[in-house]
Length: 103
Ligand code: TYC
Image (cartoon, rainbow, N blue to C red; front, side):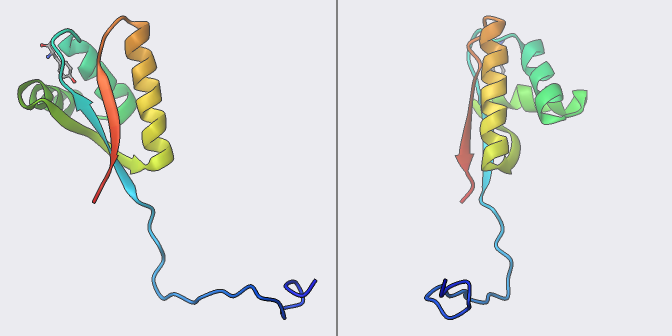
């Protein structure tokens, strides 16, 4: 057709800079019931934190109400939310984890 022959209506704009994907923060929210050890395990297993970093992040969430577990592209962030939520519910914990776009 015309487009494939290079004479159609499809145009591409040249851009000097490569687009970068929007990044999403995965946030942990505090609650009164999820055990501290469980939150530390989640940070180690799903967000690849060292035990020391995981403990610092968990305590920051415990004291401040929320904190960043990691920053990812949208698909990865949403998968982390789904996996962590499923794990927490399976173990009977109310842990709340959400993804929000960076500004
Ligand atoms: N506040 C919880 C407790 O005292 C610990 C906790 C930390 C829960 C972080 C959730 O995202 C969280 N057991």
